[in-house]
Length: 107
Image (cartoon, rainbow, N blue to C red; front, side, top):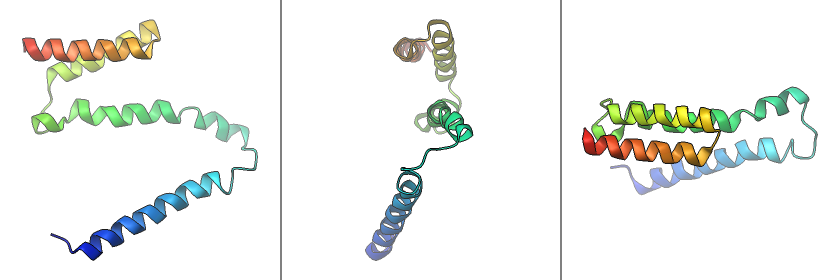
């Protein structure tokens, strides 16, 4: 167990670091127009972040001790298929939920 002072020091340093990272983008660049190439690249940030958050839960799920689970892989495939076909985020989420719970009950 770490001493309380070390834990609070880490929390403080991480908080200051997070603030400085956000301030560097919002505070310093907030009043200036961004170049076209930067605006074009920033459009893809949400599209890149969502799979980065979901992929570890599909490929190395904590609930199974890191073992690959076929129902999660098939649910991810269903999410991608429904999302591509219908272009509906809610439809893709619903398809994934139904698939993972149905296959979890069957398998």
